[in-house]
Length: 565
Image 1 (cartoon, one colour):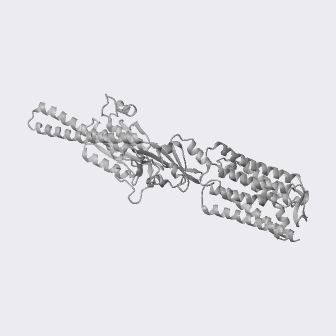
Image 2 (tube, rainbow, N blue to C red; image 1 turned 90 degrees about the vertical axis):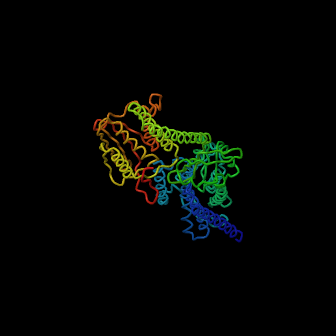
Image 3 (tube, rainbow, N blue to C red; image 1 turned 180 degrees about the vertical axis):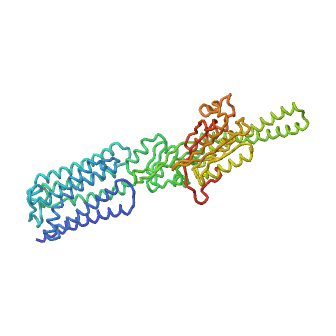
């Protein structure tokens, strides 16, 4: 009698420890707050297995009526276990089986049939004949006379589990990354079902006793080891998608900004990566403030000992629906581009200052010569002065184009109403003979890159200067939709020559020279804004040029650009 009690007490203690361990793992994962896909279904799996272990304790310690009820629940708990494992495997591997409506309908329908069948089993006996008391080793209740529906549901449960195993093993075989943690979970989850077979066919020392909690304890051990191997830090499917399919340098960060993976190109660009696997990215890149504060590419400088390397870094969030899995850092070597930009900047600066100084000297001498020149000479001097002025204006426009294209500033909210009003008022004062009118709603803001005011300046100025009518008419219209702001400049002149429009398609040619530089400036600005430039015939018979901008709300504080840069 004493040995029987000791066996029963040992089983109670074992199942209790197993249940507590599984519950502890579930609470640990729940408290960790990891957002990775599959984690909720995995926590549910742990909770179910904890309940299963505690039910095994209750069956050995509670009154017979409770024990009989819990024995009847062994089958539905096994069925739900297999379904939860299938859902976890589907989510973790990136498959969408769990979202298929036919599968959802099948699961709901089969569980309803199972519930109704178990409740009515005393009538039809298709699951088992009865739950009877066994006296083998110690008294406990067991199923007797297992029926066809019992074996059907057990078979379906094993099919569900096999499908989940297939998804995990398939990912393991096609991934070049370490999937040890995933395979431990797969093997650990198989043990409860294998042990359940032993219980079902009475091949254990104590016939009829449910040994499944023994397998659950092993699963808990496998889960503990898998968590140490960072099962949920970032799932392999995210690594495969982000790294395997990338032809550029790629670094994978988990949700805690730690380096988890990188491809060979990234290792070449950042030689210190291998020494800091698992460390925060700050160990590799000194200043990461700009990386996580903007969605635009950021340029960083790496000193590899021989020379400075300039890298363009694009940060992207790895997400699966609402789940944030981590980040990818896409790396591109822009050292040559950086070097060319520095050279162009130097050339531009030298030409701009030297040319401006020389032209100013020429214009000064022209002004001095004009004092004593006759009418014929004055004509030639005026031509020189006009050409010099045109060179200075063209140089200024080229500088603006360079700023627009290479300025590197992100788009920011701009007060469109205020900027348009300022530009049109200035040209109305400068050309009193021109009719400069506006149609502008109040308080319109748009997300603008650098150059909005310069682009509008050129459109209005060209509309006035290239109109042979002594009283030219220009209308600037701003219209607003829910997401866009449209800016239109219309005139009653002869229209924009086709040769100048062709500049936007073919670029500068020896025949075009700088006639279309102002138009090119407008085009560069619109291109940076992400939209297109459109030419139409105006209602007055002239030309109409319009472009769209993304609408923005009125910013608070100092985040706006009221003057349009």
